Amino acid sequence: MKNWLIGIFLAVLTLIAIALAGLFLQKSFFSDEVADKNITKIIKKTSELNDTNSSNTTTRLETSILEVKRSKYSIATEIEDYENSKKMVFDKNITKKVEIKSTCKIKKVVKKVHKKRFNDGISRLAIIMDDIGNRSQVNALKEIPFPVTPSIFPSTKSHPHTPSFAKEFEFYMVHTPMQAFNFKREEEDTLNVTDSLSSIDKKIKIIHKDFPKAIAINNHTGSKFTSSSKAMDRLFCALDKYNMRFIDSKTAAHTYGSKMGELHGKVVYNRDTFLDNKPDIDYILGQIKKAIKTAKKRGLAIAICHPRPETFQALKEAEYLFGDVKLIYVDELY
Image: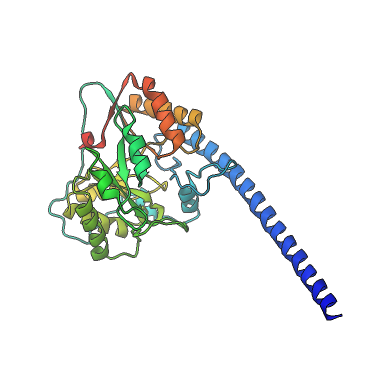
């Protein structure tokens, strides 16, 4: 009798477990499907707004490319960081002419910073490849037959060999993780808005030591960090000390990158285009064409891409597109 009851009890537990597992899988599948559909709509909206408001920095949608999952159903979420940042109340002083004071001693304040001008009538495009962190990415990037500036992750437990990889490139940047709004998959040693000047200085000092020839840094994620005037000021204080530059990846619609550049007398360039919002070769080729169009219109454009198989393939196929545009390394901007 006891064995019979135990058998029934185990059978019931098994059925419950199967049912719960089924519900979990169903929820996971459909939540992914809904997320992908939403991402598709957001990317479409982003592209449309960027095309129609490319010169309007207050309405232009800016994005970050953050890989949430890779599967046959996946669409990489270029804009997770940006979408999270939209839910937050940003500092209205970013878009107003409000005096900002620095917390560190600035040797010389330049009222107006002039970006390098090229007077030869040639349009230029600088392509930056973020997220470089392993050997296969380094090898694939070195096969690209034209200038692409690598932005390499700082050395951490996840990326222990990046200083060695940097030595294989004549020019490179450091892709520095910074705090994002509500992002749960942040990198090690991410710069946070609550970090003190000494803490930020310590991290930048390590980066400078590991990557002595770094042209500049740009932000990995960073929607929250770059939207904070105090955090950005502390960052620029440290960058000034080690004579390093900052290129704004623009992972939020409003950042203090340009304002801090003016305050600290540093030229700050902003990313114009992300090339690979979606892991699709045709899409990436289309984005490359848009970047070329921007370069021809303004004389200079900066595009950011990432080390994906589709991106590498698209870049190789795009070589014939750059006939009227000169591809340059980022160092030529300074």
